Image (cartoon, rainbow, N blue to C red; front, side, top):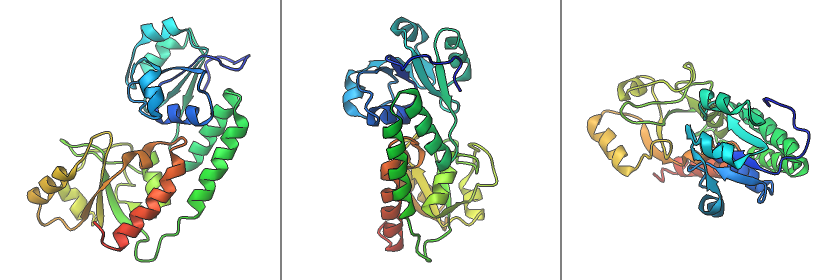
Length: 261
């Protein structure tokens, strides 16, 4: 929500969320975006040239005040509430809250309205909807049970109220932890007991690699689930990156069906 009403189209925008930074680029706000976080890696030219205002959870409040933005775009889950509240008396802040694909569509349209890019935003939503409508899970793949891991030491997964879980659903999988909330800790034993068909190791926030698959298999050779490295951006970035997610899910399903991994 906005902490104040916008009376004019914003000309100096700061984005505190990587996926929404990429969305602002897609909408054509090259000149308007004046600050981004050090994790806003897309597009690369913005990452290299835009002013960085700290991390997603460690924003540089002093630098933001110096930049005098007329709109800050944040996210309820990704940013720290107390840091956002510190800035609220000074600047208009739009805080998004995205847990489903439908909420992502709404977020994109809202940002389009705020930045006078409503047409671009509506077109983007239609393109994303078209791409997801083409996902057809074959019977062999349908409702395969997945444990999606986002962290190591301890292992952490995703509950049913997260955007990742909703994306797993749209990709044709069943989240074995959908009965839990947010990001609970788990163990390999629990995943095995819940009869996962696959364990997806995400590339973010923890950068899982092949060596982690090897470590898991060595630690628990009786594990029945197939372990797969997946691109975390495709499951977690809820802006224009969604244009690529559906095709990624289709290709992932094809590879799994053909035992490519």
